[in-house]
Image (cartoon, rainbow, N blue to C red; front, top):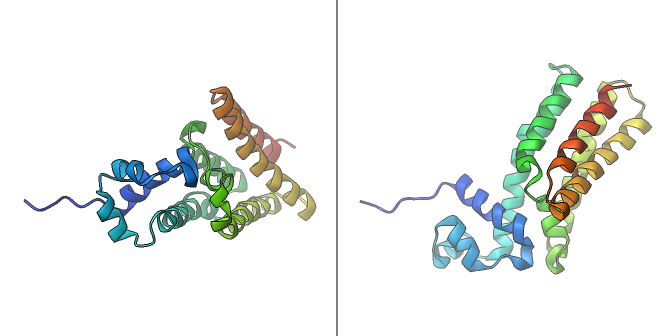
Amino acid sequence: MGKQKILDSDLLEGLAKVFRSKGYDGANLSELSIVTNLKKASLYHRFPDGKKEMAEAVLIHIEEWVDKNIFDPLENKKVSPKKRLKNALIEIYNSYNGGKDNCIFRALSLEPGSELFQEKIGIGIQKWISAFEKLGLALNFTEEKSHEYAVQTLIDIQGSLVLTKGLNSTKFFENALKGIESRYLER
């Protein structure tokens, strides 16, 4: 019987779990090896540039997931803006495991190694803002109000994740998502 191969998506999810919980500097090769069920040599075979390449692959993997599951639905003009928002909030809830998981941007931007990923994180943040700005415009908000709400949405999500972790209660994240929905839909 041949060796069982790990699927790329499973590999990247395992790596993401470690980077989200430990950050870039805190993630060590032993933990990355354990969570992926790969020996260190196998990890280096897949990622010759080591931990940096692993983190970059995780960022790309998460970006692709967010594009497909949050941004594309937010911008789908075949669906009402109200339904787009509700669908996106469900996916945001799921992507952060109900508020229990750190944001990969936060995990990689609060580290001494953050300069390695600063440009990619900045682009990702701009994509979040742009997607929510488009939603605001679809709801007939002014450009200024659309931008204001989009930025506040990102602040609410990120801030609530910090509170959720720090105070060990997902209610902050859940309430933030409800507040985002109210902000956009109850005018």
